[in-house]
Image 1 (cartoon, rainbow over the protein chains, first blue to last red):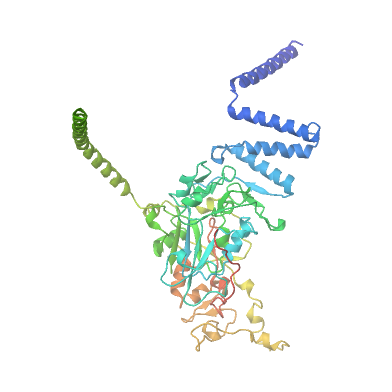
Image 2: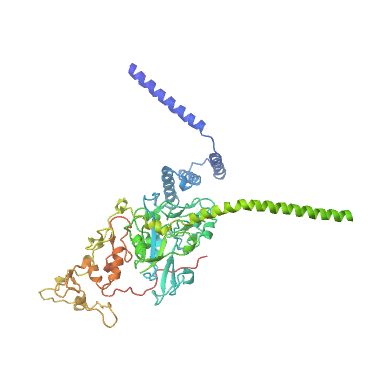
Length: 332
Length: 225
């Protein structure tokens, strides 16, 4: 009996302690401006919902669920400030929202950069024959807007002797390769010293530790300063939500990569972050029928990209700007 | 009137004085400033002399185990271990034999007689050799073994397996082979990490007509903005 009593008392103590802790936490947690606005706006939303529908929100479980997810999404942090847990939460929220709104089954990831990896890219201007398979693969992989014909990669048909793509023809559509012409591809060069990241007023774009320059689409305000800052025309602005046939949507996505972007965001090549962080090649490299595209780890002395840098004549675009792009052109 | 003029002159004088004062101060200031500026210049000079990015990359020689990347899956295509060395050691190439439609060749090319209805295709009438200089294209036995049809033969008379055709191609295309071994020609299969598995020569090139045919690009571009 006495033993049991003791146990009961201990349990009571525990409960008391728990409630005390919770209270202390609640008291210590100063209501920040953000949480105040959050509560206020949730209250406002609830009030407006009661006004419109004439009933308490929550009657329709699905709608209220979506509403809650959207509010939580609205008040999330910048990706770089999130803890691993918060990253997982936002990713699962995005997945649920996509399922609720569009009936899409997505797998959005938030894989961190791999240790001791710095991605680099090389493009063989002797081998490229302008088939543009890379462009179609990129459109498909990165869920680019089919309506406005957005492309992260451009291929230019160049006169011999020229090395500046602005002198080339980027709109060719005829049988390729043409005699006495060569082809040169451009995309985001993922500069080590990227000017675009410095121009962003909301710190929505940055260089990841593995060298990939990424955009947090939910912190981008669409001011396009980064587009103006980029000397390589590597960034694309979406004027609307991407229009893609449902069966063509790539469902394996990454938060910083090919997930379906909201309207009015800056987007660009991410070296297919959703693939490369799992050891796969970017879609353009895998699609290239001529083997002009070389991708690999710059910190691996045995990698193909290091072989190219060591044994081939390489150059980069606008090297004199000091942006240090990690994208080299080379000739055989 | 006079008073006014005097005043004006006086004003002039005072402005001159203040100007002179300012000049003197500026001069003194500049004496102090010049060494400071020089210091700054030296500082920035030293900063701009830091190692170029390419050199810093090339100086990294710690080995990286690309097999440590966990998510790499085995490739679905059949592969074989290459008979040559790569800078990182052993590597694999995509196998070829399974891709050849009527392999093994000794099924037909043997002792017994073959009576075929589709004589045209069975005698390889569909193969048009466009390999070598125009007008003096290669003959079949320049690459195929004259006796053992299940193998290839190089100019030194070595028997070469269909899966290892790079040994044959490399005797003429040695530059391409050197690049291919290193990684500047050809490509890896699906993964940049994991064991090195690369395309064989014949994965991309038709050995009978190795040049890529002219065709329309897969898509087109519209102008930016």
